[in-house]
Amino acid sequence: MLVEEYVKSFEVKDGIFYHLSVKADHAKDFASFEMGGTYLIGSRDSPIGRRWRNSSVRTYDAKIMKYSYQVMLREAVFESMRLKNFPSLPSRYSCLFLSDTLEGAHKWAARIPQEGERQILKLQLLDGQLHRTNESHLPIEHLNIAELELWAGKYWNGLAGNRLTELLFCGHLTVKEIISMPPRVSSVGK
Image 1: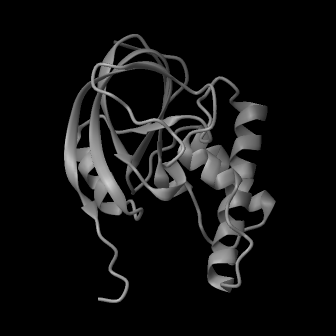
Image 2 (image 1 turned 180 degrees about the vertical axis):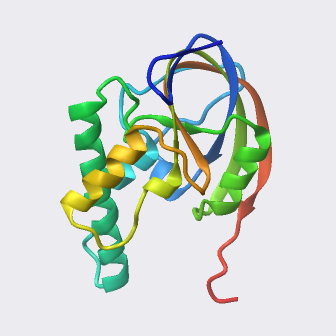
């Protein structure tokens, strides 16, 4: 059952959702989810949140450095906007990204570039906050802070878009099922 708080933000009382879990390099220091386990999400940075905060800018590869700075700036601006205007919404740094259908989780699996063991977790959300928005409001172009703030407003207001839906969750959940997937294999050198 969901209780609407904002236009696209809900207080979760109970519900089934899906999460793509990838054992990528940036997640190696984090414990894996276990079948039947109950977890609190949002009390610390997630693997991807930590990666965004600690993005690799100490590289000689100009393309990687440029992309890393763009992502770090975008995430810092989006978090600043959330803290200032939408403090009750889940942080992108500490949330768990979800899909409301198994099909949606498979769509994300096709898009996520990280290599490693991949699983889709079927989760029962027990309580917490869920924010629905659209990835089309996450620009990766060269933008200044004022432009990023405009995109962040659209993102945190939960405006519809023409790309995949993003669900951000913080709260308690239980793992109901673990669905194994083949790992993504590097195409470098092929």
